[in-house]
Length: 155
Image (cartoon, rainbow, N blue to C red; front, side, top):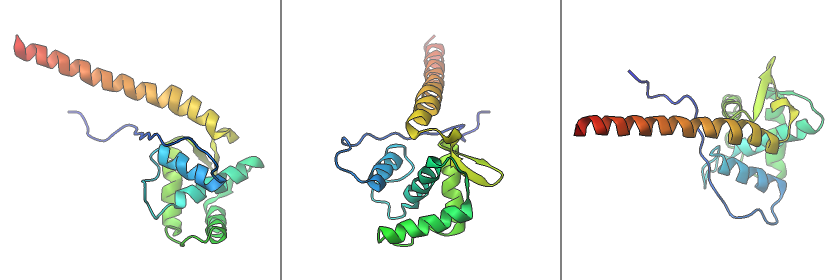
C-alpha cells in the first residue's frame, strides 16, 4: 500500500516584478513565492529568520537558534512589528521548514545558509534542478499508471 505522506513538497507562486522593495520585503516575497509564507499571514517571523541567516552568511558564520531568536527580536523591533511567533519552539519549527527546503543547514546545533552559498545558487541547484524535476517525474509516473489502469478497465 502506498503511503499518503509526501516525500517532499514545494509550493511556488508568481508575483509581480520586484520594483523598489527594501530587503525585508524582498525576503518576504521570496518566502511567499516558495510557499514558506501565506499571503496575509501576520506570523511572518520566517522572513526575519531568513534575514538573520542571510546577514550571518555575509561573514560565513553559523549561528545558534538562541542567537537567531535574539536577532529576530531586534529586527522586529527595528521594523516596529508585533512580537508574534518568536517563541523558541516556533523559531525551531521555522528553521526546520527552511532546512526541509534545503535553503539552510544545521551542524552541531548551529545554522547557516546551505554551504554559505547565495539563495539564488541554492534555488538553482537544489530546487530548480533537483527537487522540481524529480517531483514532475513522479507526477508523470502517477499519470502513466492511471492511463494504464484506465486502459485495463476498457479492455
